[in-house]
Image 1 (cartoon, helix red, strand yellow):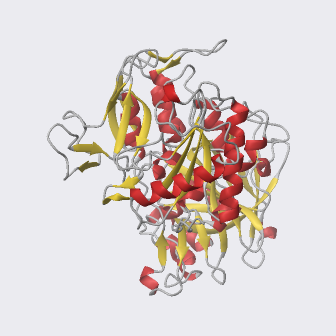
Image 2 (cartoon, helix red, strand yellow):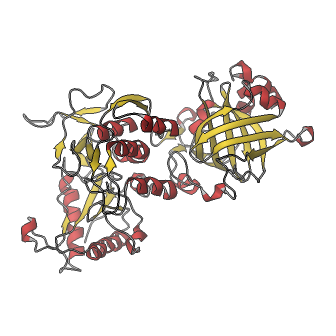
Image 3 (cartoon, helix red, strand yellow):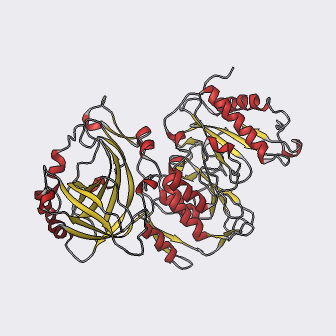
Length: 541
């Protein structure tokens, strides 16, 4: 460990030898590290909540091309009157900064890991943090999603160094970011994905496959998505009416930021374009997995939700070159030839700036447009349908799906209804999924025939609800999870847990932009189960 500290100033390559000695990279899906020097003046830090033999938090500071690391058994705290033991451990490679997944049991550090906090930091009182660490005292000003303010790391002294263990103390200073009584265990979710350790363990983004050759054993199930940083969001807030904003590594021209796009709800405030663009950046890491690889139908309202909107599918000629796109080989004259595909978070920011107040991705992917990956259940209320009636229909579908052993997730529409998405393995076409949903919905509707109409037109339904199975068709869409709606106050089509159908406080338009961001930070992505593997629709008797 002391050897590694002494070599920090040499670019980090030799500083990682201790790390490499403790890991077998033929078996463990962790990055080995290239030893590249830190790029630029911005120093990053991460705190990983790590359940190995014991739960602990790993604090890692970027210094001279490596992540200098301490294991903090009880986790960092913003309480300035609490001292935490921090055990100085081996340096880690920079590639470990955003590692979130599972380390195989039997390997060093085996267990599940989440990125509990991440951000930037600056040394205080020194231009040489490596020397400060070697000297046994480091003052660090951190700017993370959870941790803010000045922390001090102090080595306890030579007497603490036993059997390779070097004990330090971690303390937060009495400053404006201090919070008495602050407990890290009350904030257990990932700063990157909003997930808990249990959720990552049950459904990791990175897996080890022992049945594959070692070079292929680290299987990435989904591409990692990096969230917008606090500095990027602050830069948007500092822009005037228009300007250039760099977010997610893309430079974008954003315009008319103070324009009101959503009228206020009674007693509320209007929602501006800046608010919408900011929301798109904050929610993109969670929303993008439901949009990736899929053509996007944009519901645009350039003059705001109080005016008439229109569907926009064709990617404009002036769109940035970096936007992913799909050329429709079956487009007839007058039809859309090129669709935008939201394959990265910056694309969602572009769409919001383009006036797309609602995001509607296809239920099939561009590589197989005639093979859906979801079966869609749309509970569409009529003019006489009460919210309690919608909840009755949703609960009946919940019971039916549970009886069938079918995995599905509900979400409120942001208007008056509820939708249920059923993930399926690609194979059946739209005719088959439409027939399956129709059969299921007829069975449910037969239980409460006084609530449901099967008439096609709204005027002929007598105000009753429609269980709309017809959305199961190519290029027909339901609003995407986490999409805003063109409604006063910018209500959101928000995923819900099944048990929330029994919550008397639930409302179909009850979640605004800030509500959804806070909800994801607190509860994680409730729609995530539709991404966890595929399923075959069972035959209905």
